[in-house]
Amino acid sequence: MLPISKVQNLILKHAQLEKELSSGEIDKKNIAEKSKEYSDLNEIIKEANAYKDFEKNKIDLDKIINDSNSDKDIKELALTELEKLKKNNEINEKKIKLFLLPKDEADTKNAIIEIRAGTGGLEASLFASDLFKMYEKVSHKKKWSIEVISISKSDAGGLKEVIATIKGKNIYSSLKYESGVHRVQRVPDTETQGRVHTSAATVAVMPEAEEVDVKIEDKDLRIDVFRSSGPGGQSVNTTDSAVRITHIPTGLVVSQQDEKSQIRNKEKGLKILRSRIYELERQKRDEERSKDRKRKIGTGDRSERIRTYNFPQGRVTDHRINLTLHKLDDFLSGDAFEELNQNLVIHQQELTLKSIKN
Image 1 (cartoon, one colour):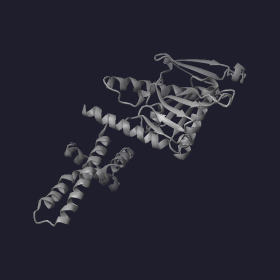
Image 2 (cartoon, helix red, strand yellow):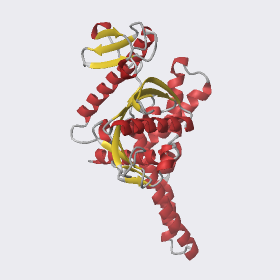
Image 3 (tube, helix red, strand yellow):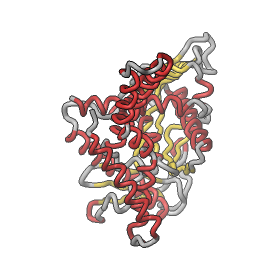
Image 4 (cartoon, helix red, strand yellow):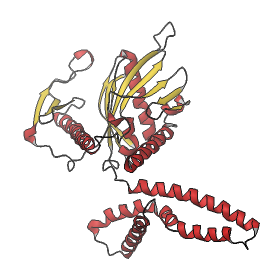
């Protein structure tokens, strides 16, 4: 049972913020923060008020049900209303508990997504390309912006690797469950016997770190410059514009050669490096907080197979929640992406609530 005092505090806070914001006397330094807090509370205030009034409404209905003078039809209506009230109260309680859970500070950030072809040779690179196209379509449907930072193409039009920034509202919270190994089962165009081949690609989603999130000291960096090279190793630039940045304390290395300018390559490389350091620190913190339990779906372990795309059967299966959607084409076009993502979010919320009870 959720303590009513916690719910009353939410309602009181909402009323206070509403009064402050409508007065026009709020400090400009705090207006953005308080507006966001008010907006967040708006999402739960209806449920909070209903939860607060539950006992009073229940007592009123119980009086009608237990009153010997009440009409039979009225009693039946009251019983029906009481059952509905109890069910809604359980739903409201769950929503409020979820709202009160500690927020992931990275959820509101933009994301950097890295897709790499895994086992399966040429077919794996084609699948990596398919995955990137899927995220492009999802971004378009949700009106997110997507910008390629680095891309390495294979000979047949596939992708060996692509790194991109996706920007919009709450991007990381929408994409964080995509990290892991994605497996594809299909008959390649080059297969003459009609045999199904299995290939894989890895996806890593990291919150985009800003300079205020991660401070990188110049003394902690080793920067090497070299000449850019294209497919097959041929030189595509006559100057040393490519950059390799090594973060000495962590050993993380980022190479960037897409731009003709060494400065631009360094800027892009630092952007990726900053996000990788930020994610590394987050993972360390999560491990310290949850040594006894898995708090996150998949934990972001890139060696873990999270999803299978089976083309002959037209299905996509997420192995973390054992959910299969027989709408592979819709999923790859971005139309069914949200359906699967919402199931992942709900599953994670339920795991979190259970862990708190335990």
